[in-house]
Length: 565
Image 1 (cartoon, rainbow, N blue to C red):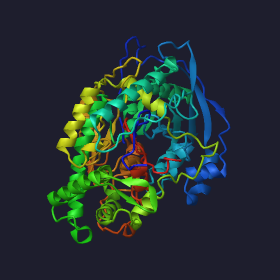
Image 2 (cartoon, rainbow, N blue to C red):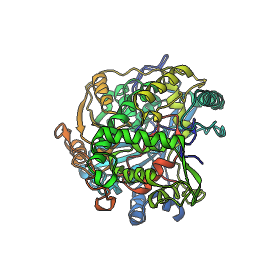
Image 3 (tube, rainbow, N blue to C red):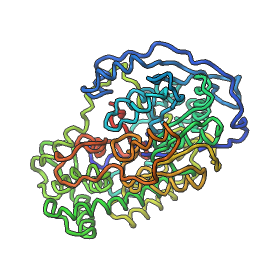
Image 4 (cartoon, rainbow, N blue to C red):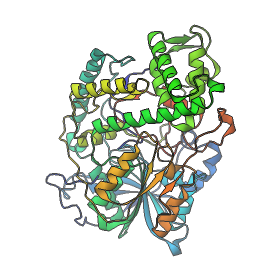
């Protein structure tokens, strides 16, 4: 298969991908919902085969001990919150009770992102994140609450039928190929949206927020604390907007933009990707003795542009990787990686430049791409769903208020390719919501005074830094600026920033307004550094470069091995 894989339509963003809303005809946002109790039941017991996919071997015993402490249940919620006596669905929840019940501070709900991401196991997985330490600290006094949003995992859901393979989009993408993909997308979206419109039309972030408030009430809590990452920040912002009096403390990491439009996603991420590629070029230039791409940012960027052009015109193949074709789009992908991948990425670019086509692959190329399909066979039957593409598609498309015609996105794509010769191909040439048949439900956020801290990563791509400032202008709150480029690193990784989360939930105060975050590697040798985050290993680079390219923006999981299977 070619390295510039087909764009696939019904997938999720999530980045870092992704408010609170007044929907036409909606019930008042803060109206009290009838109190319902959690229907507690025995937690699923996972096979060893499932655990192998879920948890690293060295943490498996501790996972089992924490899972034995975990309570599992379901909460009944209205499918349409405007019709509380109508059709009901269930939301699956988990609770890891505070260790110190005498000093218990309340319940803290967690969301890893999406839309479509599962948070069912998040309380346990967050406590297991030892290098960060926040989960264990928070669980000392807080009940940690996980949940699968409606449409995901153990909650009520609908899965649209597989629409088949989209017409391939291979670099350089032509207008004819993009139009064929657009026509396919329209057909697939119409078929999906018409499958169960009553359910799919109620898959919105606002309804997930309303479900979460039902969970709060079912737990018997007057107020709820919340920690959300990526799309989870969009969910948190909407919850705070709809239920300001019910927020105890809230932290949002890698914040979404306040106006939900896929064209704005593309524009913001295209600019951020190009800017971060400039930082990567500086890093490579400072190590010219190792990579020989040039001694300045401009020289490195020019060398990458030439390499991309050469591989686009004459893709390379290797005798021991017969299914793979290495073309110019791979250069764009490598230029868009976060800093923890730079040593491997730069070494990979050097191998691509120097390797001879038609011969055996160089070592790193072989190591990365020979594991492209290394998922370990069919997943175990009891492996919990960690991501639901239908929910992702529905939430994005039910809320996207931007243009969906072919010409608008194609023009923006052309502009990005011209403005950013190396990274512009990473933009979306069409709107993944084209043809979605259900009504758009616009979101309007309001400025408020409920407790809120947002952490913004100055150089990251999935949730570019300006989005957090835009969100602050829209809703208020305090901002912690993190000087790294890693999506969700404050909540999910070890750094000088991470302790600020535990301090905030313990005291309600933000300790400072800036921190360094996850440091950029200094050595070109990956083996010389401590791997502190997902995306920092060769295996994670392999997943980044070999997964299909998605139309809708997908959240990368900040907890690394949450991304199972």
